[in-house]
Length: 372
Ligand SMILES: Nc1ncnc2c1ncn2[C@@H]1O[C@H](COP(=O)(O)OP(=O)(O)OP(=O)(O)O)[C@@H](O)[C@H]1O
Ligand SMILES: [Mg+2]
Image 1: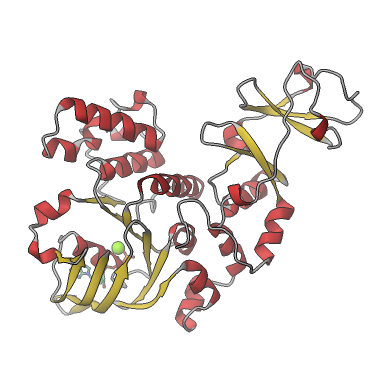
Image 2: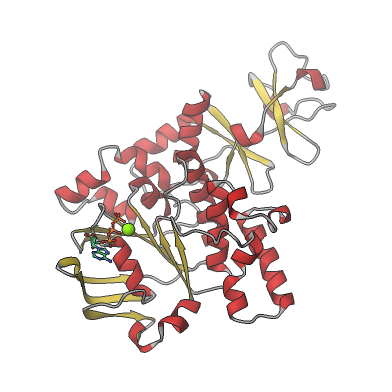
């Protein structure tokens, strides 16, 4: 647990933090959110001693950060930021292995760790020798996350890590990060000023204003009971839509009975207007119309309308909000849902999402954002 006790910090005359007391739970994502200049980056920098407080103390698992040297402290704390991303003259591999190299890990251990991390962030080995300017913004951010995780730190500090990425890639990165976090379970302190990103990722949400914490708690609680006008305005009017970020497709997707070329359409799918078509290995190939077909007839390759899975499908770990924007973007009401291996595992319908947006019941949380 990271604990702030009576923290004050000023730069010259400007008071950046004006008495912050807060606890951030171990193994969870705490998201710090608030308007520009409210003290979010200052909050983060105090944790790894890039700056020290004027008053108060910060404890990590009961021990004051001031009792450790900044160098020692930072070896156990990963840090991801928006601008100063990767070292431009280092390859992806060299960037990721900076801390393991500082720690003088043997080559074999470094190679193993690199392999694990590349897999975790979903980049093929072909990327190892690339330089940052050869990467897209989203790929660069993934490498930044891998670099921060390289030496397996307990704590991960992230200052608007996806801020420079376009909205579509940003939601993909958020979903991926949620999936990664569900595996690695770090104590994450994540700064953003995007409320949707905050609701999507936070286990624990901390809302700041003018150097003070105005409300902290589970995002559901804050969406349901905003403490006062500032928080209500900050969250915005479309609270029902925001709630969709709390659920993953795995929670509501329907089963699919896909067809394969050269085989009859499965009986469970025959009363529908169309059927999803997959390859032998279960990868999505496209869909076929079923109207006017004889039930037992084998599906011909010419009947299949091909689709690009990456454009149409959503992952089971994606949030309902991602699915909704994909539906609106593509103008379709039914989306195929894939697992991480890109195999078709379900489908989701606009009606199911609408129902959930309207309900206020206790529903399961999205993956990687598990409720306590
Ligand atoms: N090195 C500095 N010298 C002087 N003032 C500073 C310094 N760093 C931050 N400040 C001031 O302290 C306040 C808090 O800054 P901080 O960077 O923590 O805000 P923030 O919430 O991260 O803002 P943003 O969302 O724009 O990144 C701001 O008013 C800022 O101008
Ligand atoms: Mg900042």
